Length: 90
Image (cartoon, rainbow, N blue to C red; front, side):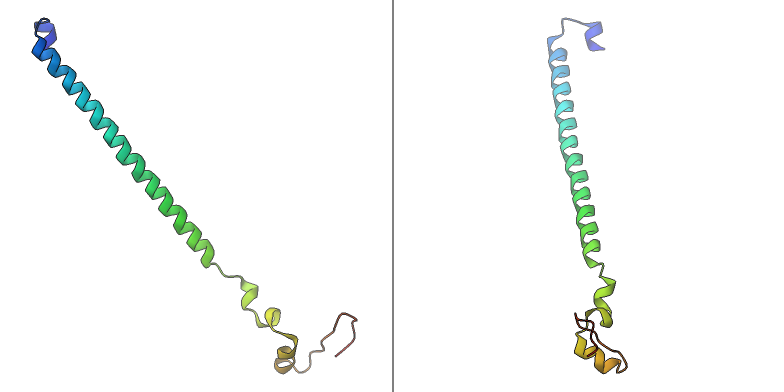
């Protein structure tokens, strides 16, 4: 507006240039802040998902019949007949 009224006013033109530079610097600073913020949130979400995935347990690993040695099965179920590779009863 000042330029329209007095185009020869060098002080006003210099101030306009300084203000534009300051606005540009502030916008770039905000971009950096928010870009890092979203990256941090994305990394935090990724770490949380990985930890939740690692906490899931294998259901069959806790079942005694699937993991127990053959001798322990005889103690739990005396009527179970255990077969070896030759399909002979033990």
